Amino acid sequence: MLADGLRTHADFPPPVGDALAMLAAQDPLGYVEAVEAVLESFATRDEYLEDLPVADTVLVLQALAARRSMAAELSSPLLPEKSGV
Image 1 (cartoon, helix red, strand yellow):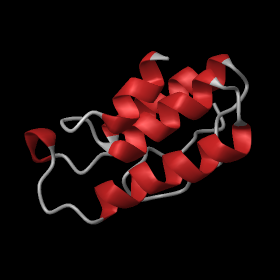
Image 2 (cartoon, one colour):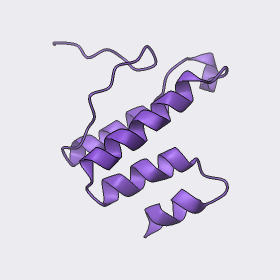
Image 3 (tube, one colour):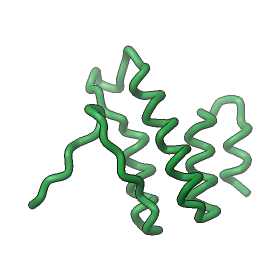
């Protein structure tokens, strides 16, 4: 219910609300679509927190998704590369 409220709250980014709602509903396909939209929003920005071009919200969403075995396979210069270590 809370995630649905965030989806329609005027001060909350709709793609982030969508991603949270899909996590809550345990909808992996919906989550992938939503988190990709969040990542796209970072790709179109000119400014970043502390001037560091990182999709920090995506990192947090992916950490939450991983707890539910729903993390998406994403690749972007705005995300750290996975290491084989």
